[in-house]
Length: 108
Image (cartoon, rainbow, N blue to C red; front, top):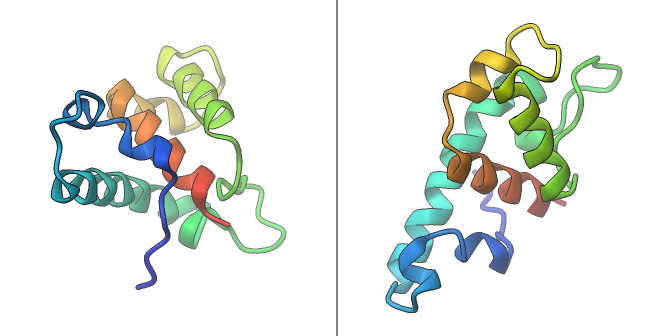
């Protein structure tokens, strides 16, 4: 499996890092958790957020983090119509949604 580098913004998601007390291992663990959460999305959105050509399911790779967070929050709040995304979004905390969005935004 190929590792995709995460943006520096993802490292800032962990509280210890923001406080300047985290180690490189904490940063790696945060990145690993974000990648693991994002892996669940690939069941529908394709490997690394790239669905097959012609798929009605949108690509996530390379989209802006703020757009992805906004859409996930809309699903979570029931403000955006969906078949299953509203249920999936409710399973994630706001921090997890932000981390997943950062991961997909970094995929190029």
